[in-house]
Image (cartoon, rainbow, N blue to C red; front, side):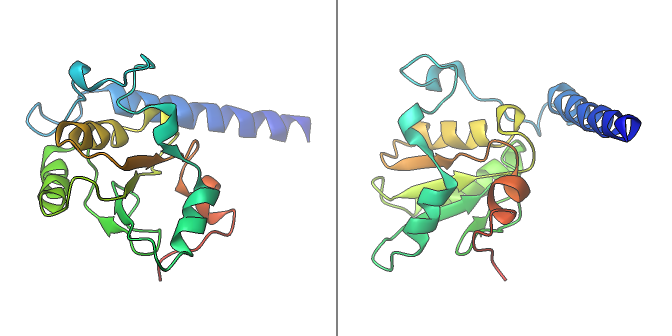
Amino acid sequence: MKKFFYLIILCCSLAVISCKNDASEDKFSETNVVEASPETSAPEGNGEPWTEQQLLEPRDLVQLLNDPKDSLVIFSLGAGGIIPGSKDTGPSGEKEALKNLEKELETLPRDTDIVIYCGCCPFNICPNVRPAFSLLNEMDFTNHRLLNLRENIKVDWIDRGYPTAE
């Protein structure tokens, strides 16, 4: 049993290392990969384009989804539109998908309540959330938040029984 437990830990560790390597390797050509620009960093100096106040917990999004008066716009950046009502614009770490998001955003008032999420891998290494959030900052949106999926969409949303699109 102890060997089995260590084998599981080893496999999980290798998966995380592999995901980190995939995110850092130049597996796309320079014209396809988007990096967040340093001038869009959060004012509090956390090295991210968002502030702590702009992180939205999954349970809080569930409450917003249940409010029929809320005019929330939700964008999926790579998880495939799992959350009900979300628009899938593709993985924002790729330029074409980021252009898709920009095209969707161009039609919205700058004070629109927007939530973005990905959920492809652990939050701290996700290649999609930073370029998308930076784009929202650059386009001067004022009410945008990032769904705080620390592990991935399965662990932090689906396994908790939160609603999914059909």
